[in-house]
Image (cartoon, rainbow, N blue to C red; front, side):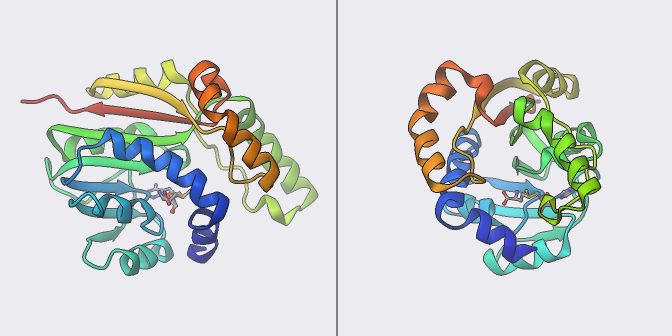
Length: 228
Ligand SMILES: C[S@@+](CC[C@H](N)C(=O)[O-])C[C@H]1O[C@@H](n2cnc3c(N)ncnc32)[C@H](O)[C@@H]1O
């Protein structure tokens, strides 16, 4: 799984797509702090954050992903665990990030509450996840058709992913207690297209993100834990 994942996001089109998402997250969190990346996968984002001069810890529910993250970021603390119940003390981190993992959580609110607990006052959270849009509305249908037709490429069963629009995710962050909540949409060129479509959509991406953001796939949210 870790090999498949790295091939998808650390090469060619995938790297361009992934970099575009990470640029948002890197711009939202302070450089050089103590960061925790939830659903860290193979450590691709952790490695980028380490480049800012900070520390990067990672947590993921998959042991295979964590083994790869450890070899990618050898000096970092990585932990197998559930983002909904964090094995860290209160007020441990300056920043919490989560890249493309939030939609898979069974109880996203628990993850946000736990993140609030382990953030230091004034700390920042920034996540990026598939937003509610035409494409994600079709995901359950695609999975179910795949199951019925036994199409292996669909890969996994539908397991109830959560997708939010701007108002819903902003309301969720505020409900937990985060302040300075900012939401924007990002990415039109998607890794799962051919090169031609990717190159074309990449060209129009800045215009779409700016003027027709509802057409962008991912939703990015950042917020702060209030200062004491
Ligand atoms: C699409 S991958 C993204 C990986 C990584 N954030 C990145 O940017 O490369 C989603 C990751 O979320 C992890 N995950 C799913 N549910 C989780 C949970 N409840 N707690 C922690 N990690 C979880 C998966 O194991 C997987 O590594």
